[in-house]
Length: 302
Image (cartoon, rainbow, N blue to C red; front, side, top):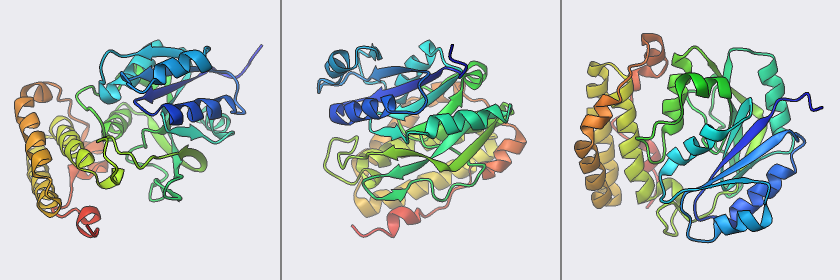
């Protein structure tokens, strides 16, 4: 009889068949064996679903009819049977002992809701989380272990986000519900990041126009939904200036307009989704404060 709690591995996939195959192989190499694996395929067109069926018949495959973005993970959450859920991208996988070590940490802290892993970017040979505090403001969505109790209490990812910043929103809601988040720098998930961005262009995924567009939309939703009106308006205006400066420098005018129009046309459902964080949690997030100038973008050579 297995005395270790069941861990559900919830993988979101979209058009990265080879990376997904590698991720599934690595998951099966884990020291921790009491796992179930779910792959939610976001309507891939590259044969990802067929590959899973043929090569990994024990994996529970959920095939979406269209790409619904990060909300695809929610379909995995709905059917997860584990006491914990490991969220992965199709191009990320845990170190062999990462699940076991994280479960052991959970056993020692009943208030712990999420463990954020150290995300090692294999393309860049660095850690994407090297600046994280032990109590981080967010986790990286390609590698985190979430207690199912948290999912049951606060719900799943916010489906108004298509991609990016959903981890920030979920982390804030986790803290707001009284749970803790812990960053484990010694426990790793490897991000086998491709040069192919989600915009389907051969461009740096960190500075792509696609990322710019959805960063604009997602962080705007976060400000509108989670902060008191004064702070939401104040920092939303700063955020728009921030995005305008990046837009001008990189000539992202088309994406800027698309993002702005999306926010305007969806403002009613976004406002209807408002659930303000407690004052303490708003303060932890510095009331949504952001700079006028995005130094990460503007210092980069074009």
